[in-house]
Amino acid sequence: MPKNWKTYKLGELCTKITDGAHHSPKDIGTGGYPMPSVKDLTPFGVNLESSKRISELDYFKLIKQGCQPIVNDVVIAKDGNSALDTVCVIKKSVEAVLLSSVAILRPDMKLIDPYFLKCYFSSPAILKYLKSRFISGAAIPRVILKDFKLAEINLPPLPEQRVIASILSALDDKIENNLAMNKTLEDMAMALYKHWFVDFGPFQEGKFVDSELGKIPEGWQVKRIGELISHQKGYAFKSKWYQSKGKEIVRVSDTTHNSIDLSTCNKISNQKAEEFKKYNLKTNDVIIASVGSWLTNYASVVGKVVRVPSTANGCLLNQNAVNLQMTLKDKNHQGLLYYSLKNDRFLNYIVSTAQGSANQASIKLIDIFDYKIPFLSIENFINFSSHVDRLIEQQNQLTEENQTLTQLRDTLLPKLISGEVRLKEFEKEITAAL
Image (cartoon, rainbow, N blue to C red; front, side):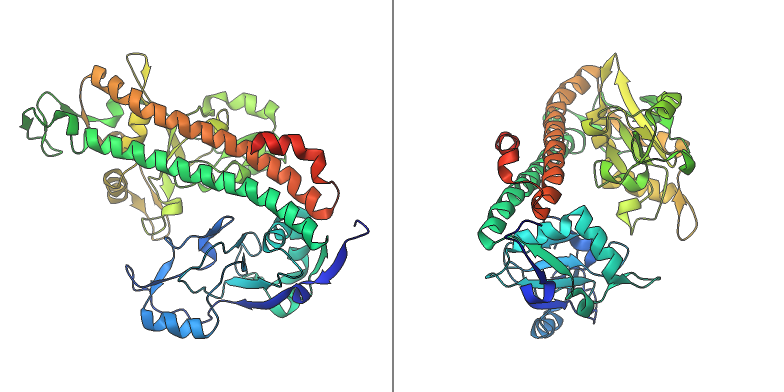
């Protein structure tokens, strides 16, 4: 620890350390006030859209109990298998109250910068120390807050904290902005698909005819997806092959809403991976979960559709998923394939045809292949693909940029938080990234 740094207890650095409500009011669905839990935490803030909703009466009762975070509070996962894994700073006022699975830390701004505290808890070495000391409970891992207050934190002077925090938070902000832009591009591409293939906007002046999908423009056909694609099922890689470095194995659990989280993937040696080249993923391949949960749990739902980002090019596909490609007249139409399947009609179709128990569902490949879409001429497909593929390429570029930013942040964070290096040593890299 550098000479001008000091060691404090967490309880000395916060004016308040508490958790959310221990009472969970009824979820009223739409409307009402959000009540986020640990599942709604992200590194960039609290996701209010995914949280349960409670009545106005319950909301104001819980505000009186101090369950509402305020600006500059640091909130951290307290209970469950993800305890201490996710931490963020409240950047703006929120009309929400938290459940008890989330801890609220209110930093003393005269002693510690909130973003520095957030970064401190994000350092792998610090996280390992905190988990070994302050998580208890076998069935449900839990942080006991009265003990957590005793966690030791090594701090530089406040001005240096602010400089370190400003750099790391700037990298986080750039990553968050890129994620938001990526979502906008995804929405634009989805809207374009709907305009062409659901509303038939470019063809409204022509005649429409009846089909099994409803009214479609005259001259169009209804085709099974299976007539237009090739496929490759994933492989059941053995856990004994897993190691810390090498080629990533993509499981259904590694997929996000529309992409792949490489940080959670298991790996096998590059030498071993050479034996399984047929399971390689390529940029813009479309993955469908053939085994998963039912509709109430979208994160792992059977029929979940994901597009392979350029950052996952060359990874290997694990079992319980199938990889699809659409190539017509030597032209790749992965964008069209992805948006043809990334919609409620396909998901509801899959769930309605899936089989299984109350806890797990599975889908036969023939049922995926039997899904029907409106089909027009190859020339028009190429026209649509040229538009949507530009949006997808921009998404891939942003994903690659975020991978670079994340690697830089993850390299910088533990070294700066521990005082091992000073910012000047990374000045060129930081300037180039921002």
